[in-house]
Structures are given as C-alpha cells and as structure tokens.
Amino acid sequence: MEKMLVSSVIVFFFAMNISCNLHFRENTERINALNEMQQTDADFSNRSKEAGFKKAMLEYIEADGILLRPNSMPVAGADAVEWITSLPDSSFILTWQPRGADMAAAADMGYTYGVYSMAAGDSIRHGTYVTIWKKQADGR
Image (cartoon, rainbow, N blue to C red):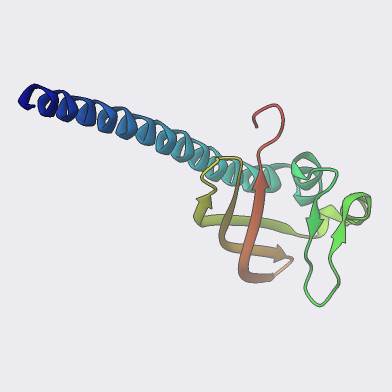
C-alpha cells in the first residue's frame, strides 16, 4: 500500500511538471506574438511618418480589411483600398503610439490601442485608435 502511494505521488508530481511546462510554453508563444504585434504597430506608424499614411496603409491593410472613419459608415475590402488610394497623401502626417495590447490565447489574433497625432499644415489633432491584428498564413 505504501509503495502504491509513493508511486501515485511520483506520477502526480510528474504530471504536474509536464502540465506546468506546457502552460509555460503556451504563454511564451502568446507573449512573443504579443510583442511582435506591438512592434508591427510601431513599425506601421514609422512607415506612415516616412512614406506617408496612404503608402503605409496600402502596405499593411489586408484585402478584407475594414476601416472605421469618424461620422461615416465603415468601408471594407476593395472599397477600403479604393478609399485609401484616393487620399491626398501629402496633405497630412499621421503617427501613433501604441499604449496597450492584448493577444488571444491561440496567439493568432489581437489588438493594439493608443494615441495618434495628425498634423495638417499648422493644425495638429490628437485622438485615440484601436487596430485589430490577425496572424496571416505566412506567420506574420
């Protein structure tokens, strides 16, 4: 009986060790994906500053992306790309700073949020934003 109890205790601790290690690896994958997503958001802002919002947006938006605009209905997919293409890119500079983010447990979808600045001539407007990110088939 005592030998059986000792064996059960050893099996229990072995199972707990495996469970904790798997949980740790899952969290590491999620944290790595979260950090990568936040870096991508910052890179997107830097690209907007360097090349203009239109060019940056066309590089980062997916074909099925949806844009939310103030006082307007959302534009999606090809309409969103067409709307972006029609923007007079040289009339403003849009940059943003991520302030927070979260990632799904599966590390395949998340969001970032923060504050933005839009400079047009002598005028600067500030606001908040949120971006939803979905991991692509190529892992990016």
